Image (tube, rainbow, N blue to C red):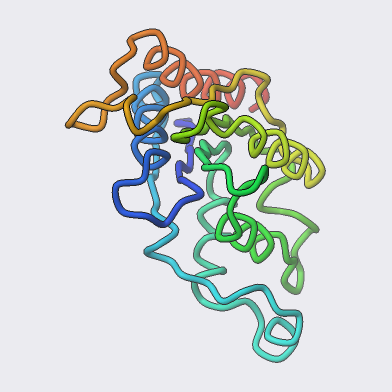
Length: 190
């Protein structure tokens, strides 16, 4: 059976460094034999999580779509910028919606036992590593198995070439290997 991996960035900005970075990881997962679905959270906007909306209307259609994509995947690749020492609200909001159990579902069905590979890119000197620590903790708390290997690319505004590829070969290989490592872990646990 082919492993299914969902790849996305925690950024909405067109030209996002993190969108470029997660594409490289997705290539690594594909090279390892996985079927990778790349999504852009900008294309599936969700309202801010609101318990009243959930109670009165259920999950919004795009939250259901995102959750279904997670459920159908055995692993995920997430590249996230760092905003004020954490990860962006758009990523937290999407995860919050997908974490909500619908009637007849097990709790955290979209997350428990899934494998995640994390990465970050930021123009700053730390590359987003503080945000990854927060994201790692939250994902672990909802049952995701987060790989120990991660990479934060500092000075991201200088790190990519015109085609969106990392200039540094070692960094490029590490990001590709994170994609491949998610596939390897999914196979071992599957």
